[in-house]
Length: 119
Length: 119
DNA sequence: CAGCATCCGAACCGATACTG
DNA sequence: CAGTATCGGTTCGGATGCTG
Image (cartoon, rainbow over all chains, first blue to last red; front, side, top):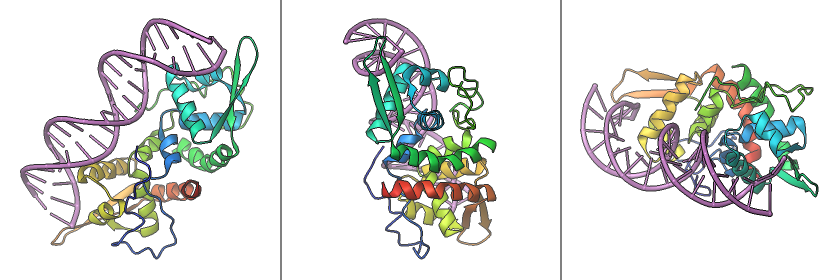
């Protein structure tokens, strides 16, 4: 999805910006990222569960195709929301967890999700 | 997107549900709805601006195609997040505003968007 | 176990055109 | 002014198969 372009909602003319609202435009990359499938649940699970392995995520989220999870994890890493730690073991072990940004997000997400959940 | 099916994140086996988290599954219809283009900005604008006309929304959001806005508004109405009031005038006037549910959403959304905005 | 490559169908968005 | 109808391009997701 497109990133940096202005949507006009900030440089509005018709609507007077007398209210103290900030700009909620095409909403920045982060929102785009978490709008995609499984992204939100990933963040939630990591938030409430702490470091989690690839396979655990697959099970818990009921991910249909492995590659999809992989893609989503990479996107979340690019956004700096989660981080990956791999252990030099056999069999291989990799754990994903929230960065401080990710935690910040998860906290702000919680009230929304709790509400959505009962609606 | 699919609604009612279980994602496995609630009926988990691997992850112990000892934490007090609620289920943040395929996340309910509302999240799907607001994930689509312009949906979030619509809610934000209506929240900070009050009742707003179709054309105003088009301008403010920088909507590219009229039909897209139309679709989004209908979806938001189906979810019970916004409502439509039409006035019997010439030229026709229609105003959209948040329902109480919509306001609830907008409030819970604000901290998230403010954070996303500066990130 | 962890994860990428590929192919195909579905959903979504944008543009244009046309009505009450 | 306030929309709906249609259509083509693009992006996303699901399935399968293969590697370190």
